[in-house]
Amino acid sequence: MANVLYLVHRMPYPPNKGDKVRSFHHLKHLAARHRVFLGTFIDDPDDERHLPAVRAFCAEVHAPRLNPLVARVASLAGLLGPQALTLRYYAQASMARWVQGVMAQQAVDCTLVFSSAMAQYAQPAQLGGGPLLMDLVDVDSAKWTAYAPDHRWPMSWLYRREGRTLLAYEREVAARADQTFLATEKEAELFRSLAPESAAQVSELSNGVDADYFQPQAGRASPFTAGEVPIVFTGAMDYWPNIDAVCWFATEMLPRLRERHPGLRFHIVGRSPAPAVRALASEAVRVSGTVPDVRPYLQHATVVVAPLRLARGIQNKVLEAMAMARPVVAAAPCVEAITAEPGRHLLSAADADAFVAEIEALLADPAQADAIGRAGREQVLAAYGWNARLRVLDHHLEAAIGRRMKTA
Image (cartoon, rainbow, N blue to C red; front, top):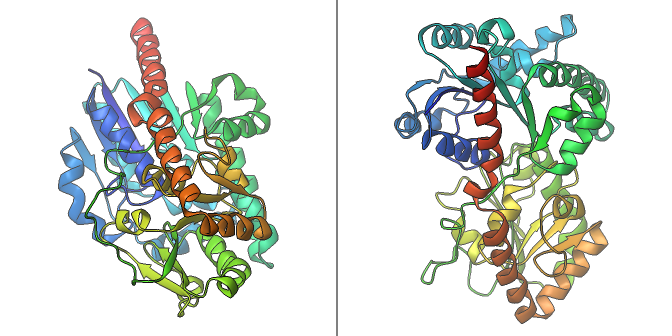
């Protein structure tokens, strides 16, 4: 059993959005094998009530509040220099002091950092030369750069600047890490091309899904109105790729589908819907906001869609819908990121016309839709259990600790 310092930008509980699902299962996996010292931020006041659940996994937790509005304003100070705004957003003196205290008082064997924003608390001087494992998850710098063409100046300039400055920091962190992880091999390949000096220490650490939790159950009540045909999208609705996805679907695809299927209704299920999402609400579109349990919406969906044009890496929303045995129609990059056969385990769509065609085909053949849903769940069970996926983390953690013991 080792002492592991785990630094995460957002409290990894409850696992109700993509990054928190990944970080929670990493925490759960680590805590079953090691003593975990968790440094994280609470950026949603409602999450504070879940602190006892998080502490149950850890030897120690430091979780100061982070006010998103205050942090956003504070991050603008980064414009005065070359620093990425992402780093300024998560910069807090109390976190730096806590990390220094843990390193001074505990025999930390290895540090695992989740997201580039938290690497500022794992500088060589702070870690005393100890091993560092870095989970970038996705190439966030590329994500910011990809946002730029869809926004006007000055936001287009700001996004390009953030992409450039954050890439420089990602490369700096990867150069001093024992290993850097990305959520898909495609993202790993991209980062190797952007940071060739660290290519040998970059590998895939895939997401998984809790298929025991996400499984259909007889008797689970439907949240939908009798007679409607529910098309469902799930996700945090203050996240720009999700906002773009539902707006695109509601404006470009939904009207065409409703011409032939008037009872079809698009359900947007997820926390913190942005104004652009709330504005979509109508007879044809339901915006739920936070729900206590997403599983009824998935289980009783006719089709689950993931029309993500800007998202990167494996999408938990896709894996969860597949685990619930529902047919999924996803953007081609989302399908390419996972180990699944298009047409058998889920359906891939490259543009609006393809989304409409694939959904039409599922509506016309409910038996085939159910068969795709069942095959999708079987694929999740075979390929995406969390324990199997996290063996990569175990391997590199043990290797890093072993190297430290030899040099101690």
